[in-house]
Length: 86
Image 1 (spheres, helix red, strand yellow):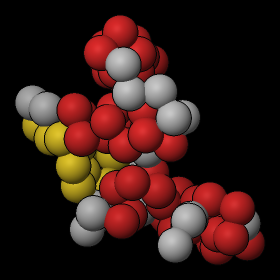
Image 2 (spheres, helix red, strand yellow):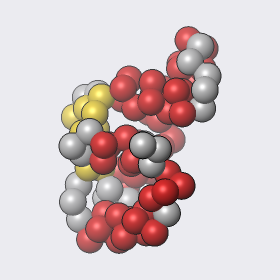
Image 3 (cartoon, helix red, strand yellow):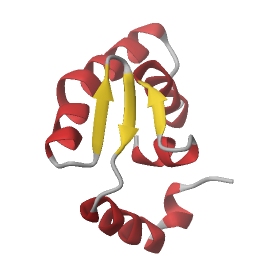
Image 4 (tube, helix red, strand yellow):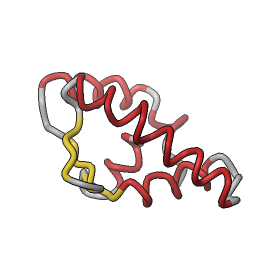
């Protein structure tokens, strides 16, 4: 999800994030999309919000540029070839 947000200027709608994850997992069935969407809403988004990495406004998710976010970026930079497909 963070990679997708970074690719989209730091914000995206939950449905867009779910679709991206499904494409990455090579399973775009409606059942899988629904499962990913629910997982984002019930687990992943609340956890990232509690950690101060994102904020939400209805269905829009935005990155918060905080110290912890900068540390995450530094970590991802070391593994960018593994995460980001060009």
